[in-house]
Image (cartoon, rainbow over all chains, first blue to last red; front, side):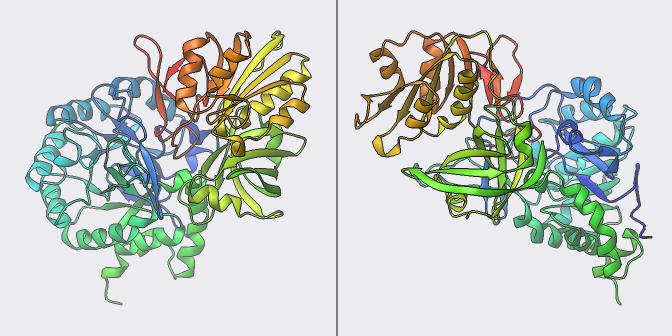
Length: 305
Length: 247
C-alpha cells in the first residue's frame, strides 16, 4: 500500500493533488463529473474585496504546449463566496484553500480577515502574483520588501495558515521566497503564470485585449521545476508546486525538486478528469521508482544517495 | 457531459475550406440542437468547441471551417479514426412546439447549428424559412440540405455571386420575409443586425474558450439589464434569448 497522505500547515491531504486556483472555479462544474472528495484539496478561484468582472474578451489564446490567459481575477467578491460557494463546498471531504487577490494591502488584509474565519477554509493562498490586474497583483510579488510587507500584514489577521503564491516573473525568486518566509509565511505555492504575448498574423496586434497574459501548461513545467529546486534549498517552509503538471510522472518530478504537494492547472481544461487520472496513477508510479509514500520522494534531488 | 472516444464515419469537403464530419458516439443520445462538442486533437493544448449540426440515431454531424492549425488538423482526420470528445456542452436552442413559423438566420460557419433546429420544426410541421449568408458562392453549403427538409431557403453572398448581393438582412428585405420569431448564429455584425430588427427568438454566440464547461471564465459576457451579472457563453449559452446578453 502506497501512502499518498500529505500533512502541511493547516492541511491534511489524503493525496497531494489539488486543482489550481482559476482553473477549477469553485468546483461546481467538476462536481458534475466526479466526486470532489477524491481530491487532496481544492484551491478555489480568487476572492477579492468586491465583485470583479475581469478583462475584456478575448481572454485566452492557445500556445504550443500551453495557453495564455488574462481573465483578470473575475469573481463575485468575498461576501458572495462566503455565502454561496463555501457552504456548498462543505459537503465534500477535501481541504479547501482560499486564494485571495487584491489591488492594495488593505484589500488583501480585509479579505483574508473575513474568509480565513470560515470553517470550510483550511488555508489561505495569497495571490501576489497575478499578472493580469492593473493595480496590485503581480507588482506586490515581484519586489521582496513589498511581498514581505503584505505577507506580514495578512499573517497578522489570518485565522488560518498562509501560503504565498509566487510569481516567476522575477530575476531572483529565491530572494522573494526568503523574504516571505521571514515575514511569517507558512508555505509557498509556486509558480504562478509567466507573462507572455501572442500576436494575430492578420492584424499584427496582440490576440488578447489585455495585450499580455499569463502562460500556463506543460510549456512552463521546466521553469517551475528549476525554481522549486532553487527555493527548496533556501527555505524551510513547505512548497506546493504548480506549473504544467499533466501526469503522475510530472508529480514525481515536482516532489523530487522539493514540492510537498502539487496543484494541477491548465490540464483540467484539456482533460477534465486529469486530477482523478493522476490520483489513480500516482501509486504505481511511486512504486515503480521505489517509494512507499509521497513523503519519501519529497526533495530527493537534493539528497546524496 | 462525458468524455468519449468517438469514431469518425465521414469527413469530407463540402465548400471552400469547409468540411462535414460524421461522428459515431454514445453521447449523441444526450444532444440537443445548438449544443457543441469539445474536440481534443493530439499536439494541441486546448479542445476545439465545435457546434453540432445534425443529431441522428448514434451519429452526429459537425460542419467546420479550416481557420487555423486545429481545424486544419481536424480536416486531415480519416474515416475510422478515433476522436477524443467531451460533451455535449452548453445550452442549445429551445424548440417551441406552438410556433407555426420560424425564421433561421445563419452566417458562414454559424449556419450548422441551425440545421438541427430546422429538422425539429419540420417534425412539428411548422413553416421554416432559412436565410443564409456567405462571402461568395464557393463558400455556400447546406442550401439543398435545408430545402430537402421542406424549408424555404434564401441565400445572400457579399459579392453577389449567388442569391442576393449583400447581407442576410438585405436578403430578408428583398424577399419580404416577415416572420418574427428568429434563430440566429453567425458573425458579430450579423447578430447585431438581427438584434436591431427582431425582438423574439434565440442567438447562438461564439467566443474563444478554454475549458468549455464554465470553470475558467474565459468566455463571459454581461447580462443586458441594470445591475446585471455575467453569463458564461460556454455553460449558460452558447444560446441566449435575443437581447439577453451583451457580447
